[in-house]
Structure formats: structure tokens, C-alpha cells
Image (cartoon, rainbow, N blue to C red; front, side, top):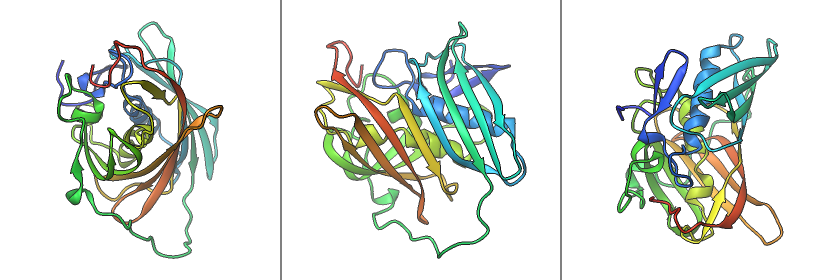
Length: 268
């Protein structure tokens, strides 16, 4: 299959290339790939004029396979100022693998002041993604995404700031929508700001909520991320989302923590 896009569409079926693969399960997609695909489907479904996605909450019900994916979008609450949509991704057997609820809101016509640009450096000054060396196969974090760190690294524990840019179209033959860029990047918070050892633990997010104040101004989206994990508590990764002009939203993930099975490594 061509690897010039993350997904190839054939009628109502989507198939993912190797560019969509994730680090946790062999043959399963990174959460950013189906997250962006559901935004693509919601945009294609349409909304009342002037409404924009303000919040989208995902539940990653099962590992998402590469083949035979179908998308459905349903209107839960129609409206001229607020609309609520449900979107779902199903595998080739019709089993739901990812679901999303999107809140569409009419943007404000007034403001309390100009946007404040980020205080950290831009992508041109960032360090290369440390997963680009030594990986054994293409995957979303190395082949689909260009990632430039201005604080931290994947394999360096602690808070991190990184810029993200899709190297390839999300869907073959289709331009990339700015909100698809936000969804694709928003799922990386737990990865770039890991606080546990990748070789010894899994810290998988079964959900993702992204608030989008406005679309990014260009192809780069930054995540300013931190992870909190305490014994007896639920792990949480939080990210502030930026573009070159200022803040564009934030993302939150809950984390399922456990020992990593010996045969599952980040580059496997």
C-alpha cells in the first residue's frame, strides 16, 4: 500500500498505511490517526454556517486496526449556535473501535485582548525527534509526524514542549484541514511528557479531550505537556496547545498504567 498518506479511502472504507501505526500494539494505530480521521469525517458531514468544533472527546474503545475502517456521524443536538455530533469508527467486522462526541459552537465576535505568542522557541530551533533513530518500522510518531522538541524528549522523563507537523496528507488526495492537525498532535501529550520508563511500563490513554479555541495559523502545532502519576491515583497527561501566534487550546488524557509485556517495545 502507498505510504504517501496516513489513510487511503475507497468508497466508504478507509485503510491506514504504516504511517498510522502506534507504539503499543503490533498492527494497531496511534491514537492521533483515528482522532484526526474522525475530525475529517465531522468536517465532511457539515455543520450550520459559522459553527466550529470547540470540544471533541474521544474514547479509544479498542485497538484500531489498519484495514476495513468505516466512519459514521450522527446529529445529537442540532442548533444555529450550538450543535452536538457523535462520530464512530468501526473495524471490518462492524465493531466500534473509537468514538467521539464533538461540540460545535459559534465563535465569539468580541475579544478581551490580543493573543500572546508562546514564550518558547519555534520549530526551527527545536531538536530532532529522538525516536527517528533506531526505530524498526515506520509509524505515526516518526514517519507521519515531524516533531521538533524545544524542551524534553520522548526518552527523557518529565515535562516537554514539542512542535508537530504532518509530513503527509491525512487522507490521500485531500488537503489537510487545520483542525485535523490539532487532533493528530493532541494525542501526543502522554508520549512526549512520559514520567515512566518506556521499556518497563505502558501508559496508554483510553480517552482524549481536546478544546480548540481557534484553528492554527500554519502547519505547525505545539504541545506544552506534563504528566502526573501517583500510586493509587489515575494518571493524567495535560497539554496546552499553541501555534506561532499564541494559545489555540488544550488537551487532557487519562492513563492506564501497567508493566510492559516483554514482546512489546516502542520500536517493535
